Length: 315
Image (cartoon, rainbow, N blue to C red; front, side, top):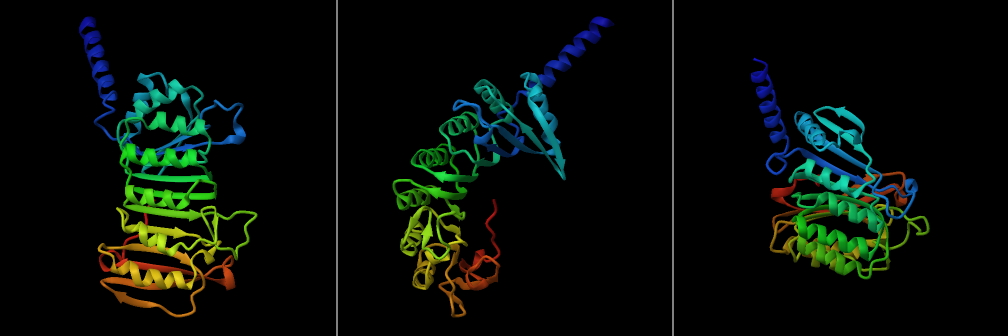
């Protein structure tokens, strides 16, 4: 009897472990977030300080089983339950741990978040963790966009076939912002750009993505001539980047493109009321009273094809 029980137990354990190793076929990760924190680092070779994961609650046990099989369960720093999801907060210091953790996550990820990953070692760690993964959405927040991390972002989009990117930056010193945007427009279907406030730049400046006094409207039109069909721009602190003349150009040209456009962008104060239809598109100026805005009012130009009027930009 004891031998039968032992054999049954060993068989069951083998099957459980086998189930836990099915990383290629079972989706576990809903969202995967990598956060770099330079202030906590002891040296330039350190890994990102925090890796945070969100899972459908019903899949959390499978993830924990995968960690246990690979002896990584000791890496937990904290675990939070919120609604139907579980959030895992983990700190890694060894590149080998990142590779093992990557295996535990499986092949499919919902959305990848990269926050404060400006340094080269952050980007290398992110590449290790994402190797072999499939994901369609990325949300990237970065203090300073350089050629190095811009190129890394483009290569990540290509490698993983990302088609939906939300990018928020404060400063930028890349060689060509225009070429960067046009390349993103070739690769992505949907792009959201957020310009954070910069201490040394006056709010009344035509400023966007590290550049002053650029005529952005023709560039936005050019972006839609590529794969891109959805563009959101939040430049609420520097609304003069898109003056009334640029708004008029976009009103005239975007609805006439041979695609169902979805466009929304903050802009300079627009005196006239605008609510019109052009070539199947709804064109309007949205107004909002905000304390930080010029004259207490914020304006946004909205151009959406009739079939996409109820569509929002989801992160």
